[in-house]
Image (cartoon, rainbow, N blue to C red):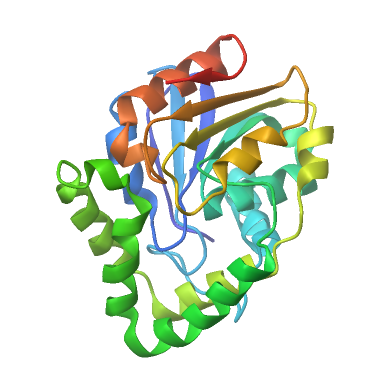
Length: 260
């Protein structure tokens, strides 16, 4: 069973899935601003945080199945699912396999497109670096995930992100990279899911092709998108704004496609 923590006693259940080389600790800043109407279920994905390694390759489908075991144990029948980056990929796999359990899912600085060949090759090259020089991989890569224009004021958060990444099991990181390489196109999930879909993206996100993502969103009334002035880590860069969007969208309604 995946490691998880629960906070709050709200009437709406919100399951939070972190990204690659993260763990459930990343939600601390965001949690301060989230509505008391939520009960938060924060999960460590396979090979991350306190969760064990399940396989040499952690596909997004495997991760989704393990998340489902947690939600089943907790007796969750209808809930909201939000995933950052790799957690978003896992959320899409969950929505594809178990749509009847979801009120909504949120792509939080994530994408429904698979890696293109260039990205896949980058990931393949990273496997050797993770094996041989994981600390260097973390220290070099993490700062690039934050808004270049605000790195001075985000220095503390960048260091925290490095610290959390360095705590990731080496084999867990490798299994996740292999799983992300195998990701398939989930456009059909965006087109067919009947609940609400929320997309929160960053103008300065170097990990997601935000312009392509937003341009190709299906034109459906159940999809809302927001473009924020930040990088890949809105939970650290703009937690108050991100929480305001989540609170309003998942508990109420806002006009479509806003820019902050």
